[in-house]
Image (cartoon, rainbow, N blue to C red; front, side):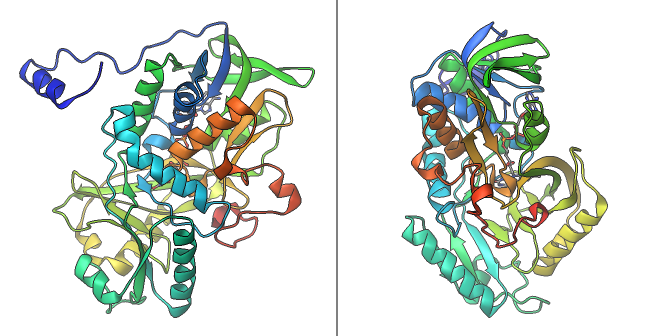
Length: 416
Ligand SMILES: Cc1cc2nc3c(=O)[nH]c(=O)nc-3n(C[C@H](O)[C@H](O)[C@H](O)COP(=O)(O)OP(=O)(O)OC[C@H]3O[C@@H](n4cnc5c(N)ncnc54)[C@H](O)[C@@H]3O)c2cc1C
């Protein structure tokens, strides 16, 4: 079924009885060419690009719960490509370009909204650092603009520019950044992958790997053994636990990150803003809720719920630049499990076990990376060579000391 304006009107007039399921409820087959573990954004995008871009077939996505139940449906929906380092910026810019054509390509309304992102500046040193980052972005073909305090006051009248503990001294804007309806991304990729013959198998937890003479030949699952020529792990916050079953210890820790949504308000924030003197980011959803978040909880956990000290810290960050937030009522909050790598950057690589591949360590940046991650992982799986934008995302960088440390924090996953 193709979605169109005509179809929406027809269904609206006939009681919405003509919509079919968006993807099949596939039963597992005995063997596939590719088994992708994890039905999050990255796993589904990988399956889609494998089928569409690399013309591969006999592909299954195994999801222990339901599509969209992980971080792809829990994040604060921000997309951007405002990175500094060579290892990262081309990759995230490639991702932003894929976002720009995604809805037409998938025939799915993922509510890609390039409403812009603004990183606020609060000191002269920070301005220098942001100018450097903006120049790196422009050199890599991305857009960046340094805004003055006056320009910011005109565009964001609710920000506390002068009368604050950390006065706003400017900002680095990326006008092509913005937000995307998070779970619609999972649904859009799932539907498009299914249309190309991918089996999406929910309620199918992978419980172990079958490894014979150094080669992975398939996976043990809650629904029995499934053989595969290539097995691709892609389980975000569960990476360490899953790869432990293959005897691997990863340079990754799992932490909780919380998200918050206020009651619906009239339009107050035209784009995404980030506080530069603490960790706070906020946008306004199309329904009017302020969607915001901050730091991870800072201790290792596999829980999908957070604790109160971080709630207080996030609200302090918000109040520092945006005092009207204190008058809004909080409607919802939740947590997701973040796979924090040692340098804050991801891994897309083969493992030392033949036929077993790994994608993870996405930290705060995984949602915006979804299209490029899927594309690059599909490239690696289909050709056994890394995609040109992902050549730095290898395991051996931790051995060779070639970290991609955007924040310069060292091997402190809780600080990236
Ligand atoms: C609160 C919060 C806010 C965030 N905000 C942003 C943001 O604004 N911008 C941004 O770029 N990123 C953001 N992120 C990060 C981003 O959401 C993640 O990095 C990204 O979604 C991870 O990739 P994924 O979508 O594939 O993960 P997931 O959706 O978590 O997919 C992994 C899947 O693997 C499944 N799985 C796990 N173990 C197994 C197993 N053994 N067998 C089968 N399946 C298994 C899980 O059930 C899950 O569905 C945020 C994260 C959180 C938690």
